[in-house]
Image 1 (cartoon, rainbow, N blue to C red):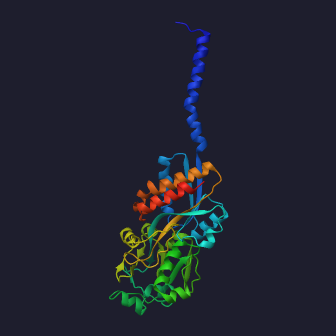
Image 2: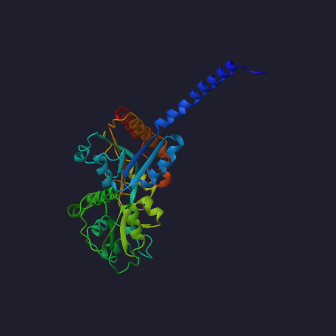
Image 3: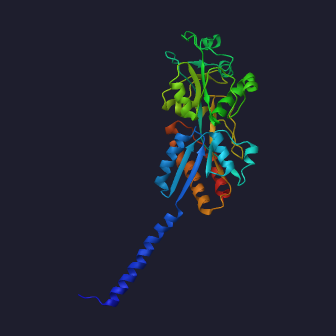
Length: 346
């Protein structure tokens, strides 16, 4: 059988048209691929790293880069407009929000506990009451065998050695959660240190670590140390966490369950900004973390990528929170936040 030149030309032309039909969606997908760069809080960094891996399974065209530099750094970069989204465990203040020229939405993504971690060989179940804990971190108690710590831990052989304090070297939402709680339960701590992302610590024997990883590493290698880190870092680094007394008088260990209990009564206002000071139940040193996104991106592709990212985080992504010891955002709050994001971000 033979083919004419005309017939062959027709087949070739048809093949080109067919190829174009199949190729054009691929080219379209490539053109719409987006990379979003974020930076900020180290508190949710392990979770955001998991999100970044998992989102690719549903949205292969979306790449997320997140750098844990501390909440203070995240807020500063959002104000400067040098990132596509920020991360903070300290809700932005009004004056900070007003500095963001393209507007900002605070998107709650998770909650969690801040552990009081310590390094005391032979002491495995340290208890710290509502009066003792703020007295330690305001410098009123400087030795491990102080009478107040002994009263919280009858029968425990506490060493006669100085307390070595480990705090954050950077502006930190974890620090804000911690100092916010201590300020809520102690007027002395509030007046001397206060709730702040970067307080001035009036303490002897102070060591400073960058980020949650830095504090965790210092506590792990420093006998006699006490510090504070997000609960997931305490678990990851096999650090001992103190049992902390809550408003109900119970000594509670940090855990996903106890953090959920504490955050279960939180009410989210229209701007989703919440300051958890002294919850009535559960583990008392808890807080939320937010992604900070702009209202105006001025680029349709970028804006659509951000909305795709936030919708995935609050719908598909929440299933990974439990795995890494973070609390989930309540479904009714998720619905409200997504309505705000999808109708506002341009």
